[in-house]
Image (cartoon, rainbow, N blue to C red; front, side, top):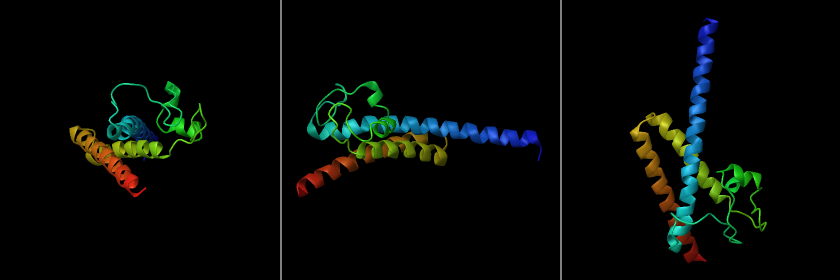
Length: 140
């Protein structure tokens, strides 16, 4: 194998990795919004308007508090304003979104079918978490 061929292979691997990191970030961002839907929909709170806020103190979150996964890690799982713990569940849902986006594009390619599969995974995730909360609250 020539050096040019090896360099080309490395460039392809790096490009594909960058593309998948971008899809992970997009998936995590979409599922970050779905966290809002999971929280607000059963409480009959409009999820398309209003700012994100701490569920403990009600303080509006700053833009740098809303970076999927990164903000939770940076804040060590606690609200910047009141210090109360933030559920790891938000980060788990965002991670599910990132992984879902990557898996959909790896398995199906970058096309409409991957988008449809990703959207279905989002609907299933929202339904599963809302149902889980409903069952959990009945048991309490």
